[in-house]
Image 1 (cartoon, rainbow, N blue to C red):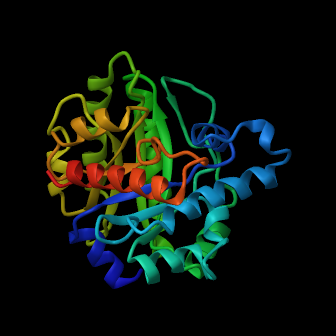
Image 2: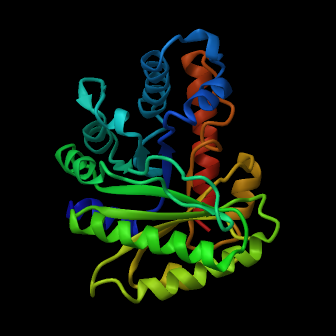
Image 3: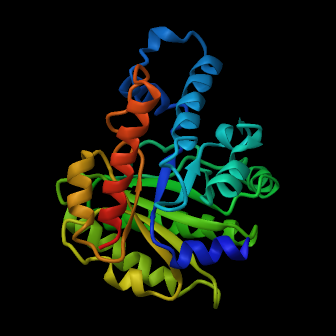
Length: 295
């Protein structure tokens, strides 16, 4: 694990950009960008288009280490180039942005009020590739649909067991037990997730840390103990389907929690924009998300 990247993630101001849409979420991301599914005729063409979109974001002048601490990449993005460099190297060497990798392979079917991660048979090989590409850390997502104690325990057990495998590979895991913002008992579910995380943090090997990516809580300040916990490098929040303005408003009420937005970051960006229009829209979004992350 790169010591300078570790120090940056622990102490520096900024937020994490989530640029990790995978096969299932890419069509929606492209549609919001203004590219209709009729514009591509194969998976390869679809991924070429989303890489071009991500590259447009990464190479924009406002996308740099002044406001953006890290970026989460999809595996295909990790292995592609940006301006002649591998994407992770471009982020760190040119932009001073710490590279992360999405390692989950989607979600299992809903059961007991949650969706666990799908099995990860290829995880050891993926972690090895991540190390070869000088990735700093990883991200893996589960979803909590309602406050079912058994389901939440299963999500957290799976997340922490996988995190230990990632730590063993000398990478920083971002644990992401997302609570659906439409959950009927969202606040209760968030409280249960928080207690469960605190219990499991106590079981980590001495001196080891993880990161947490959590839903912006209904109760502001719910994650204060997690923010201060010595086993937590950083607590970041997902936008979860909120508009950018709403996500920023809610995030600002949670001191010490920074953004890790995907849809809210790319809100308003269109393929038809001129370079100047695109850069101005992205800069406004970055500035607003940064401000909400600095409270």
